[in-house]
Image (cartoon, one colour):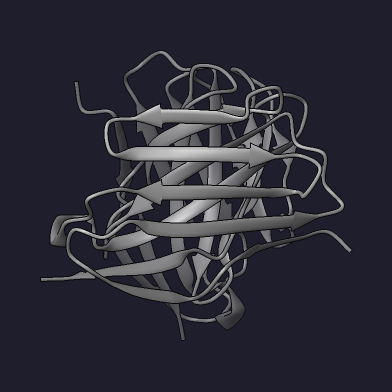
Length: 111
Length: 113
């Protein structure tokens, strides 16, 4: 039981490049979330999903897109990366409104 | 505006003492509140959840209180140990029961031997 995994662990992009972050969970959870964490600002919700095929915007959705084609996967896309998107990205999943289980994070640097 | 504050960015205490961390919020009416622990370079780990109709929750050496009138939660670690050193985050449910969370900035706790 791997829990929540994130791919890749590190990535460096140039401004304007695109990339996709993959989150996978093997706990059959309905809810999945993408956060970014910046120093002094805590975790901020980017997008979330309450089930396969559904997505919704969180607090800071601009510049990001998401898809949840399969229940176990939640993808976060950056269409045209900007230096302001340099951050640590965390994925989480949850069976209900209770506990969130977080992945190990992806450290992204945009030059 | 809506805001979540945690008492201080960093807190140092002596081993064996009780650590008390504070989470204050304004302009939210959360149905429940969670506390997480985060170690450097790792994702947050869930510790406790307390609902709006609960005053106190305990788990081993941890205790959480929730005062919806004061809009405040207190997180206590009794008999603290150096292994308790980490950043502690509070998180509020702010809509649609579990579908939208807001996190505080965290308090970095250091327990000194």
